[in-house]
Image (cartoon, rainbow, N blue to C red):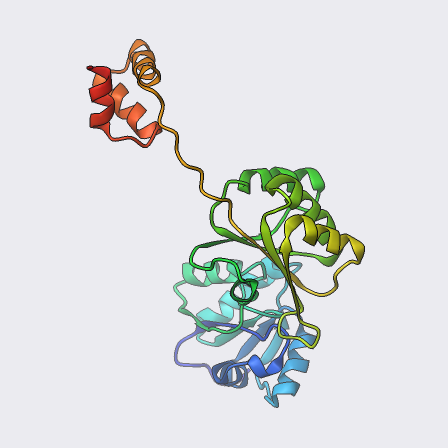
Length: 282
């Protein structure tokens, strides 16, 4: 490790998803100047640096799911001593379903500045390519591995109106799509994006039922990002006047004042308080 920098800092590097040409100029500069580079896969980092014709003079250490708990305090000591540490994962931004959050949190708690050289993201790339609404979306990461837990999670998401972005492993994608079609309905629009930015990039845009059949016919390979349309909005149904009066009376019987009972009923049904008041006193 070279001379100590003026101030230690952690730099999160957005790595190419597959095509090395997507690496930014700043990505290259940080690799070439950092005192320590913490990489999810040191061999992949070495290969990427070679493809970019970048010499990495700093010490390269591994930082992945299996060792991040042990290595985090070691890296924080390096940061606290005034050195620059660059964190890079196999592709995309660190911390997004990849190692990184633990180190970011520990660095911030130690008063170490954290910054980023932002770059590619499988989440936003797949979202943009999907052809589905992008104005509001929800990233859910990887679904649970077991079918029962997966279906439970999907039932909790079935009414979500935002576009959903998910990661999934190739050997689980057929089962995941079958469950999505069963829980969300076979007609919900979706897009399966695999091998983004790589030679065999493919985006398959079909309703969930058809997409599940496609995946079952031959297991898709490579890294997969799944984008699913949100649920159509459900129009709220206003309870009739008798139902509102009964709801207020029930709360009064339970000990609430009439004012508080009206407020609670109005909030529950997304109504104006004065409208519920008018019904109760009509």
